[in-house]
Image 1 (cartoon, rainbow, N blue to C red):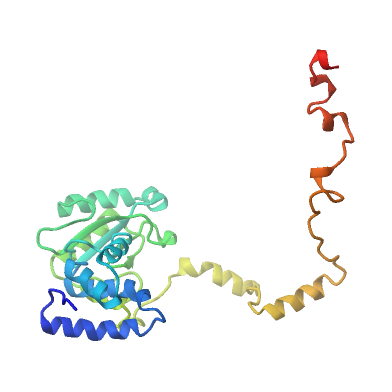
Image 2: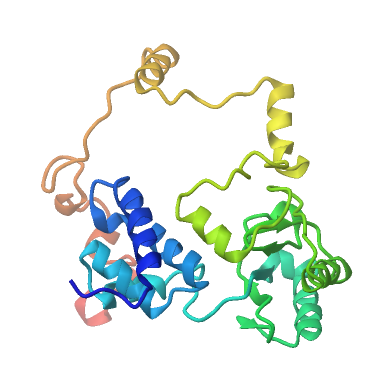
Length: 276
């Protein structure tokens, strides 16, 4: 087998990690997504070597691997910054100030969408949705949430990164981890930060709190219990009837005319004078 361009020690480590990943799946090719995160954790992006490694490991063509890597935006095809700063500019966040935040950061960093600062520290992105509309406008750094941002607060976070300081998200780990470390976590390897910080904030839990106060609960997912409950509530319900067959009674396909409109759409008045 042709080996990729990785150094022997790096290749050995990647092979060991890949074996653990592939073993999780009944079909080897299902491991492609975490394998792409794995090579990204090595190179800082999905490099040509990474593409070839995934293809060799899973018995796929490099074209097939590249097709997947270029479909998902979490996979980067050129060197990424140590921190990916993603500003949501979808409808709600944009209305709440997302566009202004992005413009402020773009001006501060001297880069545009999907561009990286010359020191390799930050890659700036517009993000379609960060799935945190209850905290709009939202910024994510290496996919950790920074809620209820303003141009000033977002700029302060970016300045801290540029100064080499740790930054703490609104929810999640105590400190945002570097891009390569997060990529390894996304490949399925624990980073010991999963239980740090709050997982959800008050705005996300408001509905749950109301449900608890009102004593509401979700319906059972047990099919037998649901069927029994339905039988108890509708004991006299008539059995469901199948749709009439074509040509049978009640079938519109063979229904006999009962009005003038059935013979002449619009009624006899719409029929040409010479045919009356």
